[in-house]
Image (tube, rainbow, N blue to C red; front, side, top):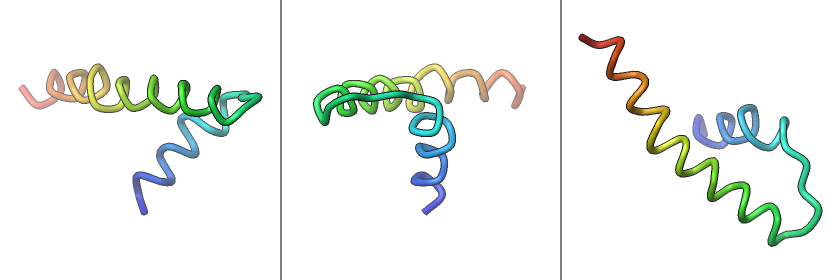
Length: 47
């Protein structure tokens, strides 16, 4: 359930979407951000 809250707070609450297709595009963009750049940013804090 933590992922659902994260998607809601970091993406859906801040993003306007007009159609289901528009929502899908924005969720895919967020998925790339969440799994890519966001994860790599955290590794710099570990070293």
